[in-house]
Image 1 (cartoon, rainbow, N blue to C red):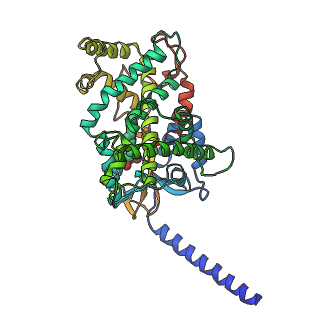
Image 2 (cartoon, rainbow, N blue to C red; image 1 turned 180 degrees about the horizontal axis):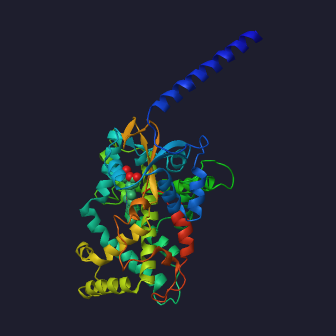
Image 3 (tube, rainbow, N blue to C red; image 1 turned 135 degrees about the horizontal axis):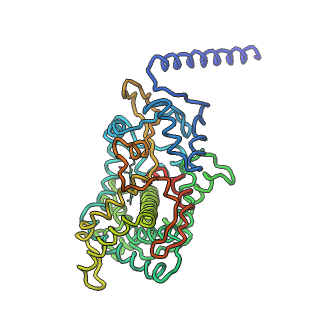
Length: 437
Ligand code: HEM
């Protein structure tokens, strides 16, 4: 009997070795990009996370590109990965459809955002889910949102900013963008359990780019718990919305995001979204929208604070628009179109401080790029800074702010304390798509 067990184990071992050698030989034959995969599963994840925490992720990337070129292999978040950097790589990546690569995210992301969110879908499913988002984001709807957003901004300025000697911008902007989202996404001026939801949101990003170890005191555990907390609140909101729709108290043509989700396919039949899909996608949209817009606004205000020229030009443009309005009249879509300079300042802010550090995709087949092969199942990683900071694409102009001056403090509307070191640490270090939005 013992001999039999030993023999079976020996056979299994020999088969495993043969299989391993076969796969390795096949892999060596294909031309993989330069770079090392490092220790299996972990690879370069910890060094990237450490660099992000120290706000040195851009340097981590540029060192890597200098060492291996714009295409290199590494291991991130448990998967063999190929980093693709540069304008040509971005073009290739963003124009590839789901027969080449999907947006499938690492395990940590799925544990937080669920398996039925848009990024986990491909092909027809992705198209269908994207159409729901686009229904919410189509131009006619966006035009309606301008007045609503303006109302929220005025309320917040009156409540939290006007007459204050000192304001801390980062938390105020986070609350403002959250309130706007509550109105636009849920059709609720005030979300129930709002304070708790906002607290949970501040933790949800912690674990997105992390080793998915669900252990006490890890950022991943914090993030998973925050996701569970937000889901509990979302469930109440979804149920209230559903019963308002069913009883005719709300209309499916009223355009908040949850109503768009719940009304898909008339709310019944194969086209309708499941509760899990409504939940996962609401959570994704909230995180995608909240982190990104908060980051842009905070750093735009910072830019106004440290660059008098930009401040004067933005002020002039805004005052010009304000002069055309009657007292109390809200902003319109047409007014936004007149904000050419302000929008350019916002775009420059996004270039210098990308709200999304980068994101991953998954190869659905062997992909050839630049003479290298990206094997099926591997991750593909893009990052914003290699193109945003490329002098050949964006030459430094005399009027642009040197990045080293981003920490300096000057007075702007007597806003003296910015809370921006907190923003730099928690925002830049953890936003993936952030953020992946
Ligand atoms: C300044 C604000 C924003 C920035 C800079 C931003 C940036 C991005 C980027 C770079 C991507 C592509 C990611 C990739 O393909 O790897 C993306 C995708 C996405 N964003 Fe945003 N975003 C912003 C605001 C929003 C808002 C407000 C929403 C909420 C509705 C949102 C929802 C999404 C969704 C659902 C996707 C995935 C789209 C798809 O896979 O088809 N984003 N965003």
